[in-house]
Length: 325
Picture 1 (cartoon, rainbow, N blue to C red):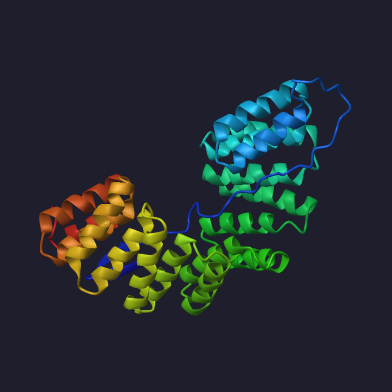
Picture 2: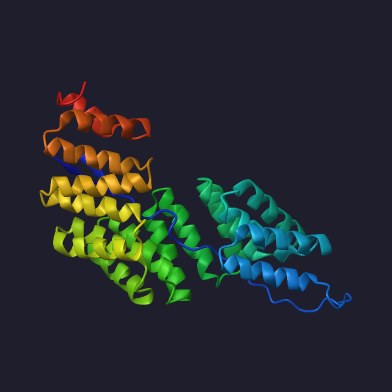
């Protein structure tokens, strides 16, 4: 989300990477090979792998799925779940390789296309991701997550109208899908539909009362509506629920800026940068707070850092106004 203050651009982006991933929970049945006392079957390894995924123990899960694949190299579900574990470890190429293998073994495996699409999204290859989500929907038209993730890909490409259509369908298929409400709220926010955004964040919070980023999202909508005290309450709640939520600190800092509490804003941006040293939005916004305090050298340093990270807009504006060289 972008806005302006004193001619400068202020930024907040609390959308990306907050949806949860699809996990294939295959039902395991006996495949007829002998089970010995003290020996583990592929079903044992598989179910232990799933249990480790649920616990966030992805390396252990990978090792267990390796055993499943050793015992049955044609077990497509094992590749999908190992790929899921690789994806959560940030090893996207390995994840895609596993999803490719699962599709080779079972070309009609909708979850394999869906998970591969998620991996492509993580790599920033959103057009390729959309192709996979299209295929997942073709194979399983009632899969709410396929519409959800395609919506996220459209959002990342800036096509929020298409994204909202997909979120709507995800909600029709799964009315309790908090991720769909949450992401639809951000698309409405980007389009300036703050009332609809608030309704969606309210619903996401109703479904998941301890969801920190939903409070941060609602805080953003309140900020854009000029309801700064409501925004502060939501950012405070987001931080209570998740003290490591850098975007909540960034959002609260923006709200403090709007209230003229520039030193408090700087403290929040400092915390956001402590949590995420490459957080370009926080450098942009802290620079604005420094300008408001007439600490121009500090402001120029922040605008320069933001430029090095890929956003040079405030550096350009500062040079035009004679604030920075």
